[in-house]
Length: 109
Image 1: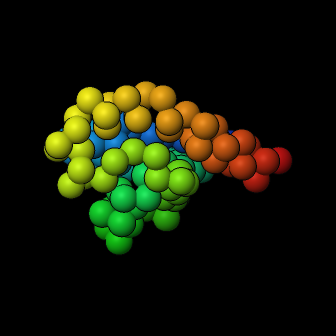
Image 2: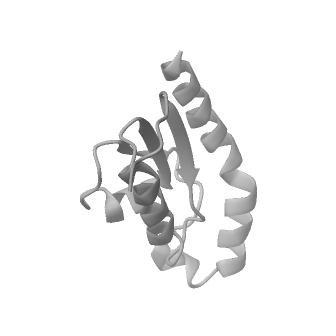
């Protein structure tokens, strides 16, 4: 199967930062870049998830970036406070993600 040609396509992907969401999103990103080396994917994760998956093999055109500061509870804590974790994801992740997204946009220019 021939890949679809693209001209400097940059995809920014971010999964819900919990088990069962990160790996499927990474697999989708790998499928996106598999047939077209002109596509670059920036996969955004929390600092905790960067530690979990940072060393895993991935194509050269997938870059991992993390949002700072850590605004969601760590895996160990979230089992005790799922509501707090969900609230943090929905309210506290937007600003750090927007900041990273702006930096990525400026880098492209």
